[in-house]
Structure formats: C-alpha cells, structure tokens
Image (cartoon, rainbow, N blue to C red):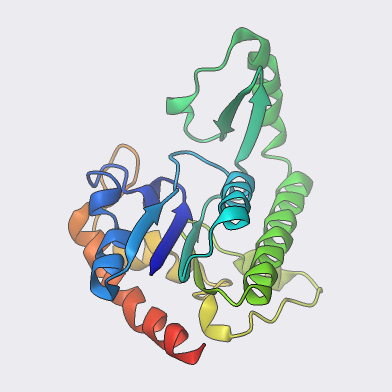
Length: 220
C-alpha cells in the first residue's frame, strides 16, 4: 500500500528535518503504508499538478495527500532546467542573468489585482481537474491549502465546484483552516525566517488528518 504526498516546503518538511519528519511520514507509519514524498521547496501548484500526473502515469497509489501552495507562484523552464519562482521569497532563486528581467517584470505584475484573480481561478480550476482525474481512477485523496485559501472566490458571483465527496478537501474557502493558520491557532509558532513549522507541529497536523483519511479510505 502506497501513500503519495505532494506539495511545497510545508509538505516536504522544510526546517522540520525533511520528509522523514514531515506529517506524511507520520501518517504512512500509522496506516502501515509505504511513503512517497514528491514535495519540493518553493514550487508552484502547476509543478505539483504536473509531477503528480507524471507519477500517476506509471503508478497507482492507494491514497494521495496534496498541500496546495500560494497561487502567485510559477515554474519556468530554461535551458532544460526548471526554476520555481515566487515574488515574496527569492531565497532559492539562482536565475541565470537571462531571466533576471523576466523575474523583475513578474514581481511587478504579480501585484496587479487582475492577474491575482486570474491566478486564483487558474489554480482553482486546475486543482479541480486533478480531483476529477483521481475520482476517475478511483484513488482516494485529501487536499488542503498550506498557506492561502480560495476564500476570496466567495466574493465573486460565480458557481463554485462541488468537491464530492465533501470530505476530500479541507475547508477550501477558509483562510483560518489552512495548514499554517490551523497550527498557529493551536499554539505552534513557525520558525521566524521562512515561516515553517517544526516536527511536533507536523505530528499534530498528521493527527488532525488521520481520522479524515481513514474515513475516506473506508468509504471507497
């Protein structure tokens, strides 16, 4: 039995000691599943979806957990290499000089309200498409938002998707129930430099997810 997890640095276990100390490993041990962690530090939702789809082409895990990252992030390809890009924290950016002007424009445009809405909607639709693919493949899964939710979508006069079964996405429209904010509300303060939580917080998040995961597994 295989537990597959994907996401950004929060799912990778950055500053907690790495994947071995991340919430996914605690869950895998509890379920007695083997553990595959494909999370990458600083990645975009496009990257998470692409790497998950690639994995599914040759593998069929028994359960999938994905922690979605900030919607403004992008993944660029240049000279055969991928670069994870965000406007808030350039610590991992080692761009060649040919990409510096593009990055400058990206940072400027990322603060435009219209572009922010576009990226929010794109992530929302892309995530729903992956959800539908997993339903077609009959793969149980649980999604959550690591740092940023779709709460702002409630301000638009558009129909919102029905995440059936409803238990498969933890409060997609609530900023207070993202991974980060939920742990803060529980008294777990993040490390001050990059806003990641330590290994004890990962254990707490695993304990929060486990009843939901077991319910989804028993429902299939």
